[in-house]
Every structure is written in structure tokens, then in C-alpha cells.
Length: 101
Image (tube, rainbow, N blue to C red; front, side):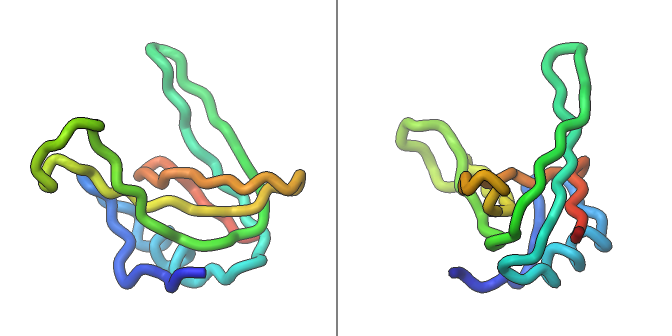
């Protein structure tokens, strides 16, 4: 189990301060619901997932070739356990809403 990051920030956008506060206050085992807006082409819909909060972490992304470190993006992710036992994680963006159940 890792500690809650001191800051929870996006690489290019800003998170709602209320969401940051909620994310920082979550403790392992608390029930959460994550709602995200999904967009593929011109279609947009809402997707939801529920489970037990595990932790907040950062995921380093980037292309698979060797490049300078500044080309990588680092995004926050919420890791949780789904009711069916599946370990899951969701990258957080400015349209993500996490709620404590």
C-alpha cells in the first residue's frame, strides 16, 4: 500500500478542488463509485464503476521508444477492487467524478 500523493494533479488540465479533497480523504476499503464521460469519435456516453477503494497512484505513460523524460505524461489513477474481485484502476481526468458510497 502506498501513501496518498502529496498533490493530485493532471498533466494538462485542473481537477476540481472538491474532487482532489475527496480523493485525498479516501481510505482503503471505502466503497466508491467512479463516473466518467467516454468519447469515441462523435459518440459520447457515461460509464460507471463501483468497488472498494485501494489507493491513488500515478501512471507514467508515453511512447515505447527511448525519448527524453519530458515527453512522458504522468496521470493519476484510482485503484479499486470491483465487487466480483477484479482489481481495477481508472485514470482520472477533469470529467471524472469519484463519490464515496
